[in-house]
Length: 625
Image (tube, rainbow, N blue to C red; front, side, top):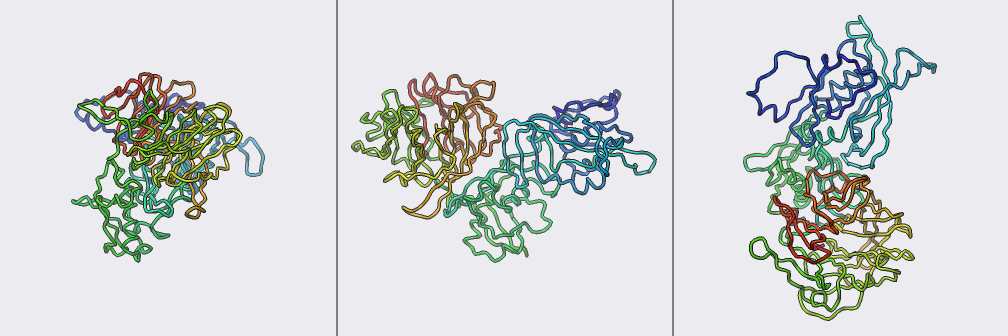
């Protein structure tokens, strides 16, 4: 029974004493010595304790002579359970409905458990109304997301959900009475947000950026325990999802190295590691003839994917042919071969702009202190007053916007040199309509937006030099302003803060490239709103392969710093509150501390402690990228 389950229309007053959902959790196992009551009524148990992955829900079948409302409620509860094949849930359906219902087709996520109300009687087969043996129940709530059959999460904000299910009376098994059963219903599962988070977990699958040798994260949602439909455990489901291919949104920009039709060997439902932490993955015949290099890339996709699962330690992956022979082995020490940045963790030191407009680096000092050090060149010596900045991922160059947003320049921060000429100039009428803060991608290309409403453009400078090329943006017009942009390390995705009609929202766009060299055409297409329930978004930064750190405000709420997955789902990580924040920044390496610009200067958040001051005055904290 879900924690937020509400009473249904005409709910029987005796129901609590006749039915219950059994729950087994880690707390119950640890309390094995506690005494058990031996009298009293059976009462409902709150099963959906959000964040407790150990809670198990065991639904119960319908009782004899159950009222229609009880059948509806029991079915909704049974959908939240873990029983194989959703066998208990199907007992609430007619035989025909049980055969045609496909819970794996999609999952609809509501903010709270659906409310069921009788809405009338259904039509007779000949079209007449008022059949006393047919009842309609309306299911309603606020829909916040859907998950498709490829496990992809899609937020929808908060829209009204309304679907109907139909009940009929049919003979009981012994033929002595008429029992109510559901004979028409929507396909898929219908879950509250807390039930969804209890049953599912977000994981990253990995594919290769088109035409490149590095991997890109593709987040999906997988059942935490055994999947009721396939019988696969969590690890096996994750590998199977990888073999199915990328989600529809990411697919145009990435490639898989697995041959078409590659699947796990038939009847594989559990994958385990051996005493050397090697995961052996048996594949079907489609993969048996691949060459060694292709096999290495296939195994790399698996190792990156399962390497994100903290519950399973995998140090190497062995792919196997259909006959059990080894195809290849790929180990943890080889992962850098397929990273956009092959030296993760080395660049964890943030930069910021001091009160004089100079670019400085916040180097670690004695104990918990930091020592600001100005960079070399015109951005560090005061020749150019820096307003916003982006440091290249190799930390050799920086791009700075100055002159009230009019000019973008690129200069070395490794050696002293003269102030270069602007590479991009905006003609916007005021700073808010001129250049955005720039951003570098993993290809060392530099991106910036010209927010001039008379000629809005998104620009990319290959290698951070030369003539800027206009990016194809079919969604950008005079009514939309790009307030901020941040490129992912892999260069395949772009996070965008967009303002339309005075409202600033967060989107993710897919970067597509056609051709090569100077003739290459770059597009940002299929932008998706990923924080539809946030009233406003003030700052965004990448915080890992598929995670963002966002400064914003929920509708009717206060400003907060929070993690958000790139598919729009909320991260379970909790960030301490911070007053009067202006911007936030994170590193690609998730172990690096968060930094933020607040009224009191630049602050940081390290693991296990609260926000700590770094320097008293400063703006625009950034990590390379």
